[in-house]
Image (cartoon, rainbow, N blue to C red; front, side, top):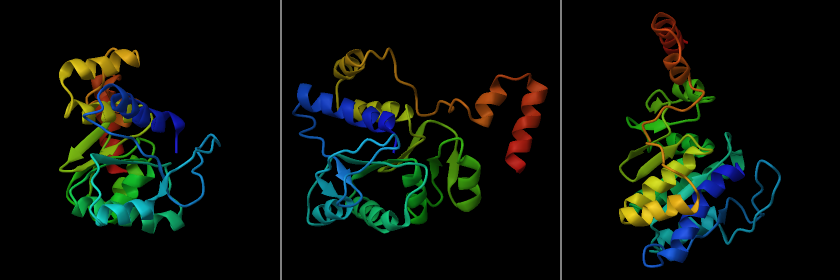
Amino acid sequence: FSMLELGAIVEPLAFVTREHPGTLSQVELIGCTSEAPVSASGLPLAAGDTVAGLAARIARGARFAAVFVCCDGSVADAERAPLAGLMRTCHRQKIRLCVSGGATTVLAECGLLRDHRAVAHWKSLGAQREIHPQVQFDDVLFVSAGTLTSCAGESAAFDMTMDFLAASLPADAVAGVRAHFMVGWTRSGADRQPGSVRALADSLPPPLAAVLKVTSASI
């Protein structure tokens, strides 16, 4: 997983627990296994529980405002079953589930995204559309379907997290979070991913953009 992405999720949530304790009580970091999770940059972190342990707690009645799953582009085979179990448990208990990176693939494999819109990082978008044709993958920053939210990852995770907080905080408190992190505004989930084919096409002359869009849709 990306430390940028994880920080973009954890830091706004942790700030709110300090400044608005009545909204969120705590932020808990969970690992896939009992071993310390290690970021893509090689930095280990301390986790308080495992994915399987969290799923068991939720099944016994533990309630959470949301569960965020932050993964690299691919998920190890040994981690797929525990992640799938957690996702199904959150879905049954109607707990908001926000996923990015390879976690979106696991969510699609569970069948929870069937006939829904979802988001994948633009580098993997074509592959996801081919592997999971029953999911309407898009190249926007993030999209929600019921209690499920999928995100392109990296810095888009901050926009997704702020959208989550905006649903439970007054506007001035949300503005306070942005001010603390020196962010002038947050992007809409409907914004195109920088680097995607359609974002590139928007910068080209209309005839060339039309050719590029038709070609990318046909490959």
